[in-house]
Length: 470
Image (cartoon, rainbow, N blue to C red; front, side, top):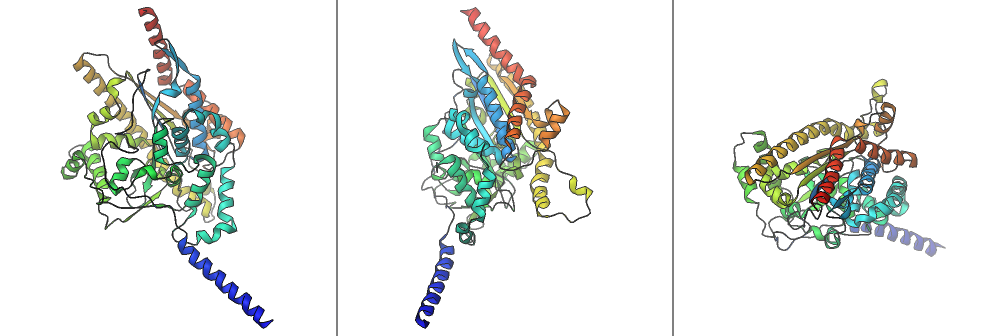
């Protein structure tokens, strides 16, 4: 009996030892180094074929943060674009197929990434694979599972790694950015997170990964989406290893000039600030690891991605990369699922609890900066419109027609309906009724959008002119 007791004691000690040593072996997926940086290679804007296509429309969509609320509203927009058809040179075409570039942040990154990976299939199965699934319950089950508790004790493994696993199981099947580039079933997708140290945007594009000499093509899409959705305190930050200085990368000349400049205008100041943020990644000794959080903290609408690109590289470079000279229409669609901040805590003398604090941490910066971002975007869009007209006059051609389609819940005309949807919580699961209401709201908002209706009218007129010419 004594020997048997000693056996069980030894076995128990051995199990504890294995568990403890196992903790040190559990590790998140480390991003791969890039042996040699090459221009126009990998998953990048520069290497993507952003051809406006037969319809000669260059279209950019931006899906905001907002959890399943954002995914449902954005999905409704895609449905409406699939329903709207136009005729070009005798061929029936869908607006859905004219989308060239999609930005996605936080909850919006889930839809954006799936759209980019699966293309047309997003209309067939995104609803069943995400919107109709209690995704939040799946995550909670993973977190509280006994089989994952020991993994979570590791300092190199966190709740965002479990989110990544669930995203892969439900949506992405371990696909990488290289897979998305090779298949190219959908538009080019840019997923954004927030740099925890600087508070700046971090875009999952090879142009950004060049700064840390890392290969984005082998990086899992689900991990990028997990980083973009890593709400503070709820999910852990996602960590990237910095290999800067090992791949021969040099900052582009416009970035170097911006760093050395003395800004005189707001645009020049923005260019220098963004350039300095980029330069910070090159100091590997100072920043050997990059920690990423919810993309909504730095730019909930993804709007600043375009603005940063223009500020750093210049309008002419952006126009070349986007091949705007080959298009006759530029369409910008901003899908804003921002809700109203909750002020119910102001009616209680109780100390706010964990849930209220988490909500405040995520909602306050988003609410404060979203309106500012919209104003900046509208101003930039007007500037681009004026520049397009000046260029067209110089070259003796018709100007590029531009459309700014703002799909935001705050624009719903019905007050009761609007308030109900603005109070939908930010979560990874919504009741079926709410999902359907958000999809219907997208249709209503597009029908009420002056620029969307102008686009449809211009496309119809284009068909009439073509028929007359024939």
